[in-house]
Structure formats: C-alpha cells, structure tokens
Image (cartoon, rainbow, N blue to C red; front, side):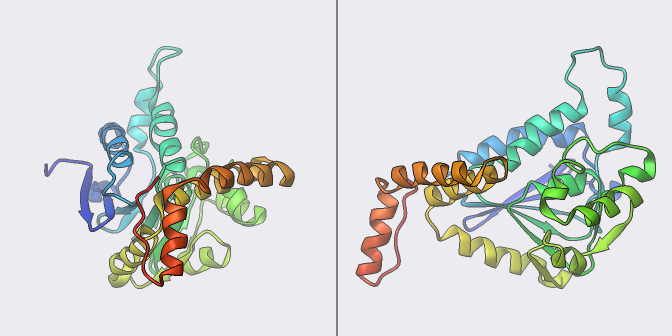
Length: 262
C-alpha cells in the first residue's frame, strides 16, 4: 500500500520497519499508530524474525508526534484514550519490552517523539549526518513519552537537561560520546551496517536474548542485590533450556550451534 505510514520488509532474519511520511518528517499520526498496533504483535510472534529495525524514509528518522493529532486529542471526553495514551501504551511500551532485540537506525533528524521512540530501542546506529534532540521546549510542549523521564537515565543529566531546556540538537557523534548512540556510520552505509549488526545478534539464542533483555531493562529500578537475584532466577530457568544444552554441545564439538529458542 503506497499510502501506508509504515513500510515493512524482511531481510533474512531481520524485520525492517520504515516510517513512511517523509513529507511530514515521519511525524507520528493516528494512522501510523494504527499500523504499529497491528504490526508489532505480528512480529513478536513471527519466529522467522529475530531482530527488528526501526528507520525512517527521507531526511528524518522522526520529528515527533503530529501536533495536529495532539490538538485534536484535546477535544476528547475525560477518560477517553488520547493520542499520547496510545503512543505510550500500545507502541512505545511494546517496543521497550519487545521480546526481541530492537535496533533504531537513525537516518536523519530525530526529535521529540522521534527521540522518545529511539529511546525504546536496545541499540542505536546513526548516520553521521543525523541530528538528535528533544525539541518539545520549542513549542511549549511537555515531553509525555519518556523525554524527561528516560533520557537522563541514558545520558548524563546535564546533557539531557541541555537538550530538554534548549530545544536544540546534537550530532550523532556527540550523542555517541554521551552513550546514546552505539555506532556512527555514513548515511550510505547505514542500512548495510545495521543489517550486519542485526544478523550478528540474530545468530544468538532467542531465549537467551529475551532473558538478558528482561534483566537489563529492569536493573535500574532494583537494588544491586535484587537485580542479581533476578538474574539468578532466570539463570536457573535458562540452564534447563534446549538452547543452553545445544550451545554447550556445539562448543565441545567445535561447530556452530543451532538454536531453537526454547
């Protein structure tokens, strides 16, 4: 469908989701939310997809939520699910806790809701031309999907405040120094390099990756003792899995393991 706000293709074990509103800098609208809500559960249950990549078409990864959609939400009755409710609960929370690794491939401008979407990824690969910032302050808008709550957990507090308060952007290289971006490449190499990283991850045991992600995602909310206990609980379960037995057997036989994900 040419009018789809999301384009999807599978490249080997990697599912590529491309935000497809280039004339609107891939701003998130209600149609895009509808398409995310249908696509993400399908990919979560598709055993052929081992890693999911998010990227954008055109000059932007995503410039945030479509402000017209936000304004329309103001007319809803109290208690009705508004735009931000759907974005947070049905899309961003799903991405954050997705049972498979998620990579954000930032092809260009990444601001506001676009930044909050990228925050949900496990790994961030960015084109060297990408600019990354919050931008809510430029329009008197409050970040409602993790900009103020999550960004300071990823990058230094004073850097997060700089982005939040000024509405400015930083380069991909600068954001790599601050720990937000994992890898910076030329725009022409973004697709191939992201695919390479995704395929490297896809070779690993799906159940091991899922359990690692579960512990890592929750460690910041726990004491060290509780985080270690959580790790140990999943370790005990994992030691009874097919994949750990297969991995150890493959090691002893000096061959590549054939994981099944259970």
